[in-house]
Amino acid sequence: MSKMRIALIEDHDLTRVGIRTALQQRDEIEIVGEAANAADGLKLLNALHPDVAIVDIGLPDKDGIELTREVKSATGVDDLSGTKVLILTLRDNKEAVLAAFAAGADSYCMKDTKYDNLLEAVRVTYNGNAWIDPAIARIVLQQAQQNPPKSESATSEAKSGRKISNGTESAEDTIEPYALTERELEVLQLIVEGCSNAIIAERLYITVGTVKTHVRNILNKLCADDRTQAAVRALRSGLVG
Image (tube, rainbow, N blue to C red):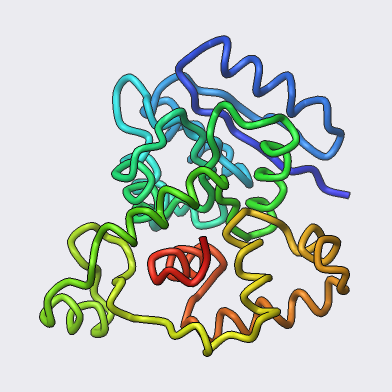
């Protein structure tokens, strides 16, 4: 069984050591490198191409969100498309959360989360899915509720496939609740809470295969490419809370 190769980019020494020590307790995880700033972090990622980069937002030389944007836009010899980004931070304000999503972060986790949640976040992110801290899900929902649909021009821009000003999906692409079945809404709620397919299956007393079918149907109905996009669209449309 191959190990999950993790890189830590965090400027606070005690926090970095604590995360490293906690994750190294698991046999399936290998910490391949660490950096205390964005510049060294980017060099580290380019050299090692880890499976998951745990990136702090408050780096001393460059915002972790900007670093995430650079990672996700890297091409050619610096292509980092195989590296997932897990934002780990104490920032829980709307602007930081939405900016992280817009930059392409795969998952978003609070620093004060429990160790089991961090481990689950790493596993889910490694498997190509999104882990969104429940506290973050509530923030995004509040943002959606506080921002009514924008102008017709913004709607047409979003439907043309271009990004709107804040880089997030347009709330104007209204999703009607009846588009999803009751079971799909239950699965969607758990996706937003950051649950893996296995956990969803356990909570709903269904098989993992059935969960995968529901997830596929949800992505199709929400016109979403992945779980992160589905979660953000559902939250901004008020489908789940």
